Length: 321
Image (cartoon, rainbow, N blue to C red; front, side, top):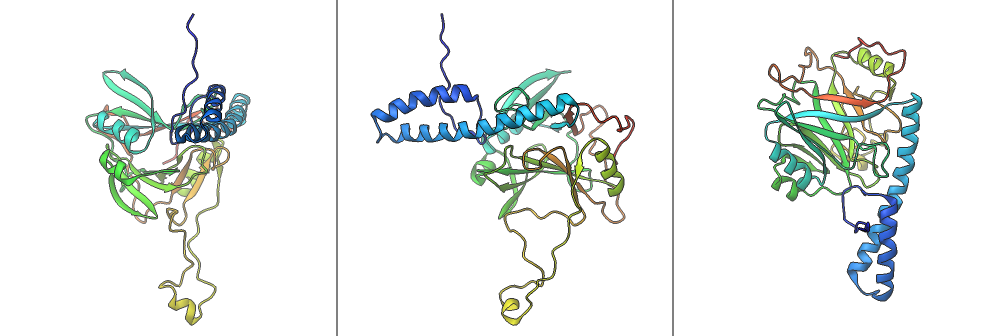
């Protein structure tokens, strides 16, 4: 009979696999390390496995808690964003080689390639699961995004983000001071900051709304919690001569490594923002109404998907502009 061998330690942006397999492999590596303590490969794999197991154990607790809450109807889980791309090969290359994401599935739907990428499985039954994903849909005319359109950008918080790999994989860098602003193949605008603490690199999807009050009400009726509107930077408290000479601004300094959010924007989401992917609602621009991110007739459009039943108070016909 065939024996099942545990997977070797492999570096991924977010630890993947099961606690059981990682623990079994660690036992093998510890024996090897005991025999050859000067072997850098044995030491490196041992350290990587120990880190992966700690992270996966924490993720397992989150998965179990989320699964039970979704099953009980007390919360939902924002799971996936569908976006059209005009060249699937380029898009997949960017997410895999440039960002370190995994290809979760590929299938043909109505003659079109549909590929799902993420930093771990979406399943609420896997040790490494409960991850947000992008569903890339091949389309000859991808939907417009950014600018005056509803879908503005996706923000990621990643432990590692190498600009040389991103550019080689087709990413178009627009700025990279402290954090990176870029456009992925297919036209999806991204903002990326460095953060080693997040469970899932996908932080939020930023959407321009036409009426903030109505949008917040819509999403809270769907069970999301809304944060406070983003405030602008305040005047510095110490405006003495020495303080003024040390800075060219009268306002408090922001975090250069954190993308600045628009004044008046509101974060909405299910559960802890540090562990879940949410939405950032951007206020309407003066005199402008955001254009829907729609492609040509019959072409796919950006769509968000959540797992779990909406609260009974949510109207099936409600919609946010």
